[in-house]
Image 1 (tube, rainbow, N blue to C red):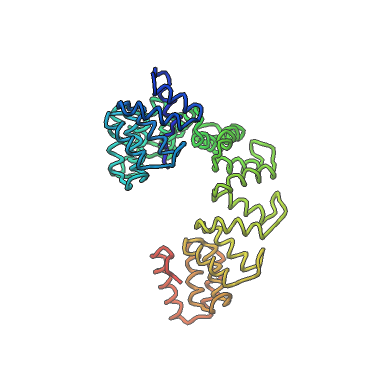
Image 2: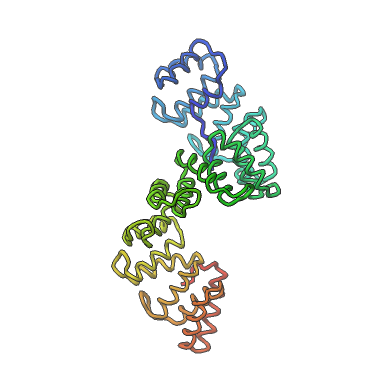
Length: 413
């Protein structure tokens, strides 16, 4: 996740307390009034005199398309002028442009170079971005220890993105011994500054009782803060607590409201939970067609459970005209991802000849794959199908099942 988009207002905020004069001061005043045309005019006068701050502000204006047509190449040109003067913020902005590929060909190595120059000056945002690259192995050999070092440098300056990243590292145990209490400490520092991800993560810690005494009410408090900022995961988690009545009075309508807010952002988990509510009629009038609509959105993102659910709905004619061929299509997509229910269901379709040509060998293969994962029903179905087959066919099916498993269920049908 990129945590380094620079805005022109942030640039001004970082420089509060600096005494400006003349055209730069006039440009800053115009920015605060959202008068970007005047600001650009004033900054350009100062930039012509090699004022690095004015140059980076012009870069920000073109980068964000404020009062002008968005122009990444022009933004790059101004950032380079300021960066050449050693301006750390401009060096960081250049790093972002190279990392994302805005106004220039994407180049992780070049992004690293600019981040390193700014980080060496102690610029916190560059240290955080550099840490992210070491953590992900982007443009550099993955190195969790180096990521931790850089995050700590930035976090010590109060950078909330770095503090959140440190919390994640301690929670997961990346580059450091897993320590939930330390994760909570860093999340709290970032959450206190309003970082939505930290607030969500802190809510999860209170909900699960990791590093703190389990406290659903406290989890709700943190989720609400993050959800108010539009964080989809927090909105979903908040919806779930309203649905279950943990930390709040049970309220299905409120659960639905939060799920819908997250789902509107394309958040897969929320879409799936909405599908479940409409399918089961839990807290809402049962509506198979609406359930199918939500499942399709999730399935399109590759979710195996949603694909299996769609297969079942087509198989049973729930919310749609019964269609065995379409059921098989969805079962196959889910089965190829290792979904046990889909593998068993696909076996049943082959055994019964629904949506496919009846094929006991194929049925045996899919039953066997599900049985290996401990599905007791699949074991029963496999044994029934074996009675319809010769010993040679059973041996062949077992061989094909092993080959399919070795291919991670891909190209098995």
